[in-house]
Image 1 (cartoon, helix red, strand yellow):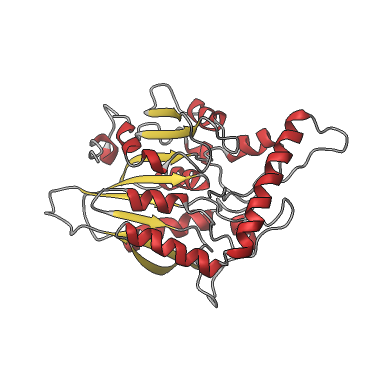
Image 2 (cartoon, rainbow, N blue to C red):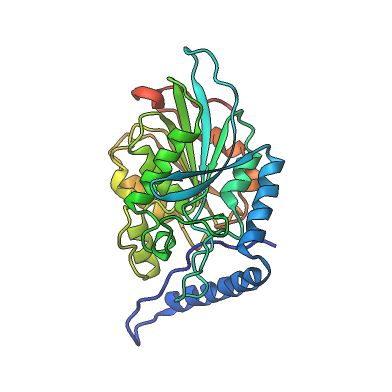
Length: 318
């Protein structure tokens, strides 16, 4: 059984102004929350962490923990030995989604560790020699961990500067040293937005891939008529900066949580000629239909003729 693990929107409609679309959304969210509650009753954070470890092990990924900018971050990875100094060192970097952020539409969860770690499943299925998976701050934390975690970091501040900076530092501290590193940043759901924000501040990114990615949370909250993510950076503000970086934005045809209009809004903020491809995947919803097509979908990353730096080099075939 598959569970959606995303922060469900909170309604802010004025009394008496709830139209059919809002009622449909509320009904869908209610059903999702029932599933989340039932799963949460039997899957404690420790059990979710154990299940994730089994997924990672099947993909040959080893667990690690490091402190970065006040957060204790969990990683799973495997790395090929760095080659000669003249050769590129390619790494696929996966960033997890928002996780189990809310118990109900008004009550945040006490632990955002995902019930269904989609990004981890994709990382485990990736056949690239070097793969790094980054959990979001506060996910998969061992009992008794003392760090900067707090509810805002899996609700309104999930894209805060401190969150982005912690993941950015974790990448540098985890990857083997190489003077010609090329990263493909792959983010699921909210992790897609973080992949965009990270790419905007790094010089070693060869491509960005988002899977059901929330790359314009201002548009997303307006679409669902829910509270804005105050205290969060909005990935859409980085669209112009990333115009020359190859980008593949994958959208589920049946995704009612992050519909295609989010990726389209992001693309419209990119200048003409931006290296962006948006692909709608038939049969895919927000959290299903991805693993079956992985990693073949990575072959659809566009080429960027005329780009400078790492993005100019072709992304390796998988």
